[in-house]
Amino acid sequence: PFDVLVVGGGPAGSAAAIYAARKGIRTGVVAERFGGQVMDTLGIENFISVKATEGPKLAMALEEHVKEYGVDIMNLQRALALKPVAGGVEITLENGAVLRSKTVILSTGARWRNMNVPGEAEFRTKGVAYCPHCDGPLFKGKRVAVIGGGNSGVEAAIDLAGIVAHVTLLEFDSILRADAVLQNKLRSLPNVTIITSAQTTQVTGTDKVNGLNYKDRVSGEVQHIELEGIFVQIGLVPNTDWLKGVVNLSPRGEIEVDAKGQTSVPGVFAAGDCTTVPYKQIIIAMGEGAKASLSAFDHIIRDGAH
Ligand code: FAD
Image 1 (spheres, rainbow, N blue to C red):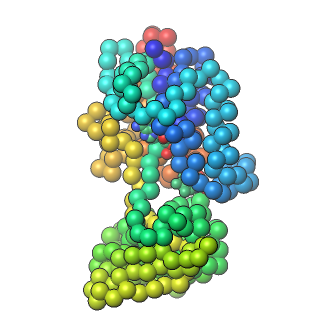
Image 2 (image 1 turned 30 degrees about the vertical axis):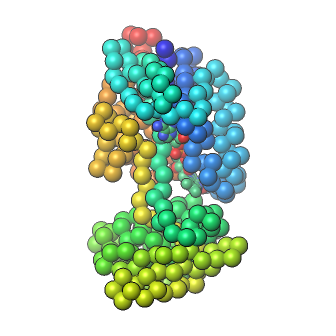
């Protein structure tokens, strides 16, 4: 049995594993894909103290750092169920194995919802982006679109309007759903165009994005916009389906945690993009992972089980 079992091998899980192992307790990591979202990222320029790096390089560094300690890494393994049991928690894997641990740290991350239109996948990291905090500065002085008129889309459009030349915000519905204060702010900006009832149908480009097509849902006509970047803001989906009914989740499916990373289940902690903690970023996920791990250690020593 483990003292700390981490489910998820991204930045949050790696930090949690290192903090636990440094306490000299039995630590394991189960990861469907070690590295997590970082593996899909090209340029990273906001991991403080590292001016610029690339996703696969950072993922490699995470793995090397975790391997410096006696952490049992179970890569390419998917957790299917969590069950509180006397003195701890059981995690069942897809391969049928049942792992037992005094504490568990959930760090299964999240995934951006895709538009699923032609060109989106092809031009990912070549103009199609998902994170304005990460990639906004790459489009300085250029024209971009933001897809989605909810709070995250409108916030992204306001943020980007301060950096890029022009922002076109496209919303599928006939109205924006963002909070009124955000909408008012957006409408006050001189370099923003808002188009509602617009269904994006295609991302166009050659080696990089050069525009997008959308269907005007009122007239049925297809329109083309020339631009250099597209930020897709139609939702971030936490990887928490397997925890429904066991651990308290928010209406968006994020694991509810308190300031120490404690979930609704004693001995179960959570960190990173899968939780209710706002702003999904590498540096934040790592900090939260460290915090959840220290909380798990605290739980173990108070439980008298160590
Ligand atoms: P993740 O990185 O999502 O890791 C989750 C881990 O859990 C993975 O190992 C996954 O395989 C595993 N997992 C999921 N479900 C299960 C399961 N059931 N069983 C076992 N394992 C499971 N942030 C920045 O700070 N700067 C950037 O420049 C930046 N650029 C980005 C670019 C892109 C294209 C994307 C997609 C994200 C970017 N981000 C960036 C965001 C950043 O990658 C995330 O905030 C960060 O990776 C979150 O870390 P995490 O550990 O919480 O989750």
